Structures are given as structure tokens and as C-alpha cells.
Image 1 (cartoon, rainbow, N blue to C red):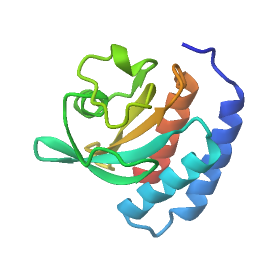
Image 2 (cartoon, rainbow, N blue to C red):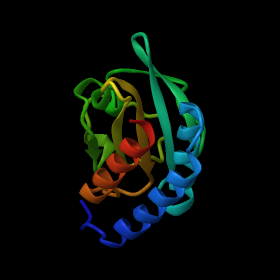
Image 3 (tube, one colour):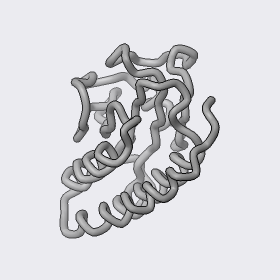
Image 4 (cartoon, rainbow, N blue to C red):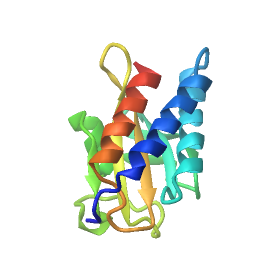
Amino acid sequence: MKPEKPWKAEVYGRCLEEIAGRVENRTVVERMGIVCRVLKENFPCYFWVGFYLPKGDSLELGPSIGPPACAEIPFTGVCGKAARSKRPIIVPDVTTFPGHITCDPRSRSEIALPVFDRAGMVIAVLDVDSEELGSFDQIDRKWLEMILRDVFS
């Protein structure tokens, strides 16, 4: 894994401020779209950013930005594990993750975080992919959790 990059905190701080200023009086789906746009615009290593929504026995694609993605995925991959465990998952190399679902072969590393409503139920999974190995670290996890908490709970 690559060393942590402290500059990320500054960029995430700006993103949080911008997102907070744009989500008031918006629907959940509109909020997801705003989160995707702001994060993708501010982080060049974000190859794909989007949300998957639980629907029955699978996760269905919600708002996203990037190349086409799988419209529906089972609960077996990174996003499924994040939803089931209710914990963030950082994958430095997707080829080493058992059950990884390849929507785009250019994706090399990934972070997935459950999104909770006010009652603590998982309503979505934020998924971010990078074309670089080891793009995500604890700084990403911390700030993305803060953004999700601010926007959705």
C-alpha cells in the first residue's frame, strides 16, 4: 500500500464544506449525486464513484460518475461485504479480494463504505474505485465516513 497522503484531509475538508452547502432540502438520491460529483471533481485518482442500493438479494446501481458500471451486483463483492458487515472496506489490490466483482478491468483498488439512515439501517454503499494500486487509506475512510454521516444521518 502507498504511504498516507496528508494533503487529502485538506481536500476532503473542502469537499465536506461544499457538499454540506449543496444538499439541504434535497432528496436522498439527489444528495448521492452531489456527493459523487464533488468527490470525483476533487480527487483525480477517483476513477469511478457511486452508490449501490440494497434491493432484495442484490445491490442495484444508484447515482454514479465514471465509466459504465454493473447495474446489479450480488452481496458477494466488496460492496456486499461492506453492506453486510456495516463496516468500511479498503482494498489496496482488487485482484487479492475473494469474491471481487469486476465491473471495469481498469479498477485496481477500491474503498466501500455503508451509508446509514437516521435509524442506523444501511440504505446504500458508497463505492470508489481507482486505476492505481493502494489509492485508499485511513484518511479516505475517516473523511468519507464523516461526509456520509453529515449527508445521510
